[in-house]
Length: 494
Ligand code: GLU
Image 1: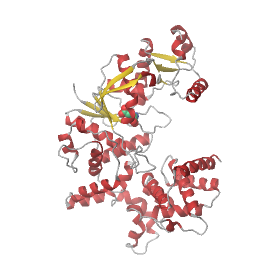
Image 2: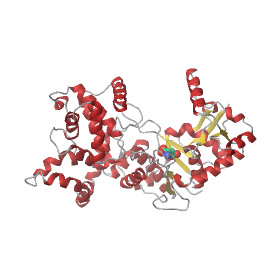
Image 3: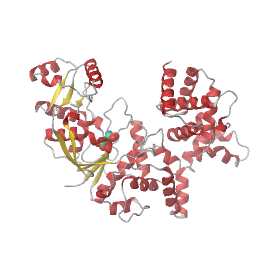
Image 4: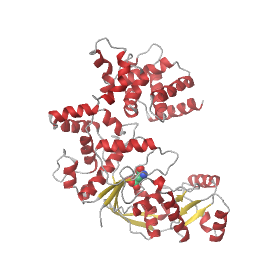
């Protein structure tokens, strides 16, 4: 059977380093077996998916050096490769399941489901659909649907026994059916959920091997049922270990840079990043640490993927990046520096800011240091201010970070509007609100205009600088974080 793998990102946020990690393993596995690698865009969440996010994912993966043989941008024989263009297929397959009695229509109201969930939680049970509509006679179910009554389609799940399946890395896995919910497959608006769409697409796109994040392991029983219900052969599934923060929790943007854009802007070489991501879940038989993707393809063996929770360690990545930089020829090195930031496109937004503030061209260097380079490490004393205490600065930076996370489009004007409205809601002067931001971004209180700086740095770099500034002020305990989160909600809800 021809080997076909895929990466299936949802375009609902900024390109994540975890997507590059899973993509790398799928690409390498396919190449090592002479197979094909597919990009599929999982945009079934219509409220949260945007074309801009899709474009950003495609660009970021390409920057990282990931390449696919089939996908929405390159075509292929098994398209369309965007789930939003496949809705008719999912509806047809959901109907097939209804006809075969493998799925049922559920007419329960949101209130009933809420009430049921609350009751189950109060009894210490895992929330799970109780099966009320499973008992509806078929003619009644049909008639109610025909009369236009709102409903979803759910998967029929066995009440007892074990679901047994094979994971390529874990061997046989058993999950009791009673832990598995009667999953909604088609929502009341007729849109599919991930579970239906992923099974239909992996089958129709002839995916032979699914390598995906560990967080999907518990969804396997639903997928096993779907494949059985359709009578399809299931692809081999392997669930890769999740990347972790140093404290063992799942890699998160609050604790680590998770956006691929951060690594691009800070001058990591894509091949160093991929080399590092490769080592997160896998090792060469000879324990060599520095290698190229081509060498990884040559030596790849799925059996060498290890299941320990790999900790994302920036210091190790920096070391790795240095190794790759030193291995470049002088010419290549200069080309990389140019491609990184010393080029017209990247510098263009700075020109109008600098031209009016410069007497000698050499003054430019000191003005853009924090925009092209990292900012110096901070200490609490750097935030000294005539009216703001350190605690005030922490609270402001926390709220500013939350507010900026909610700005949909990272553009100068949108950033300015968001922080202006935050200042009004917090009843602080804009100048005071921005004082700690200057320090957080630039390490000093006088710098180029703040909103241009934020726009230039990008969301991921800005987030990290705000976070490490809070750390310099002593950081936030879990309790303080919770308190600030509540305080922020109160502020923005007015
Ligand atoms: N859209 C899912 C995600 O972004 C894909 C999971 C899968 O690979 O099946 O995580």
